Image 1 (cartoon, rainbow, N blue to C red):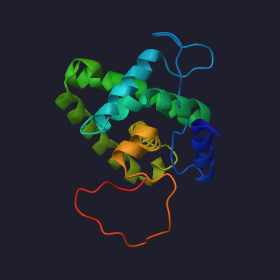
Image 2: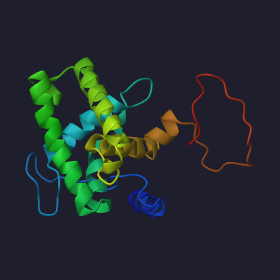
Image 3: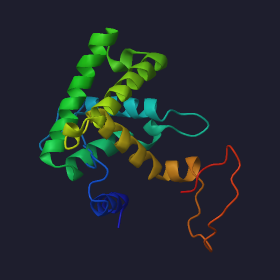
Image 4: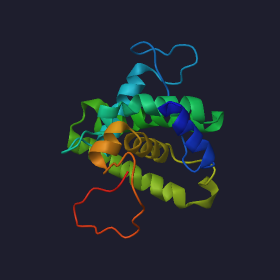
Length: 186
């Protein structure tokens, strides 16, 4: 079983708890090939969004795990048509809103501007999620965040360099001492 099959299986087992398990793969630089939801430029944008959510620090960021390709694949293969539309329409809304608020594309903004914009968008999605009428229609940015976290922490880089990873653990120790600054377990 490869990584993609494993993640798809986990998503099915979780009963849709994570929204947006399909990711899209793109063909040419700006165009979409048959069967693709996102273009290569959209995937590059998703890489930058993911890298703003999980930036490179002492460990690699989300861009290092090709998070844009992961999101594209998950949206395409795991989301139903309704959620695919929410995600793709949301990406277009994202591009338009960034341009309106900053006067530039997301890629042309510096790191501080990108972070400020995503923080404002995160506050918007939190308010959106609190409204019961929106439960069946998740906010597109929540989908992006969930896919970023899922893709990053299930990747080899995320599991081995960001988290503490033991490939074959020994016995179960339910109470392990934790010191501030220790990595979490994968």
